[in-house]
Length: 107
Length: 121
Image (tube, chains in turn blue, purple):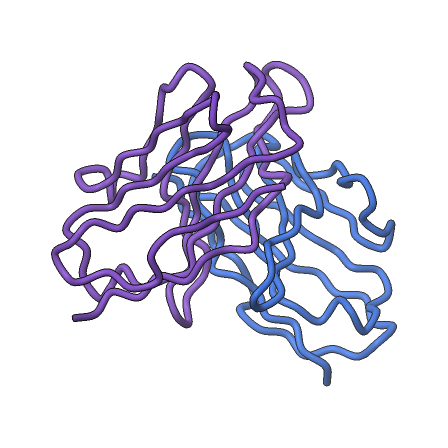
C-alpha cells in the first residue's frame, strides 16, 4: 500500500493567514493526489484533483502543487469558513489511501 | 445526489449492509463508486470501489469481509461487511469516482452525507 504522510496534524491560524499543508507519498505517484475538505457531519468536499486542478466552485484562494512524492495544499488567505479538516488522497494505485488529516482551527 | 441508508445498529459478528441511492447520474462507463468510512476520532479510510461492469477493488485490510455490488436498474450501490466488531463502528460514505479524461487520475467528486453504523449487542 502507498502511505500518505500528511503534516501537520493540526494547525492554528488566523483569518487572512496563508497556510500550507503537506502530503508525502511513500513512493512516486506522479500527480495522482486529490485534496478534500471535511466538516463534521457533512460530506467531504473535493477541493483539488490531480494535484493542481481546482474543482469547479472552489474559491481560488485554494491551490495545490507537487508531483512525485511531495504535494502541498495552500490556502492563500484564510476565511472563517476554511477552519475545517483537510485530507489528501492518492489514487495512483488501490487501496486509495488518505493522509491522516489536518485539523485547522482559529488561533 | 448520493444517499446512504441502512441499519444504524448491527450486532457483533453480524453483517453490515448499506445501500447508496444515486440520483442525477447516469451510471456511465466512466464512473466508479467508492465506499469510505470514518471511525470515531479517526480519519477517512477507503473501503473499496466498484466499476460500471461490476469489477471491484477492495482495501486489503477488509478484503476478506467486504462485498460491493451495483444495480443499475435501481441506481444503487451496495456494501456488505461481514463479521463486524465494535472496531467497524463508523460513519460510512459512498462517493462517485471519475476522471477528467481517460488515463487521468481518478477523484471522488460527489459524496453522500454519510450514515452512522454502530456495532453493539
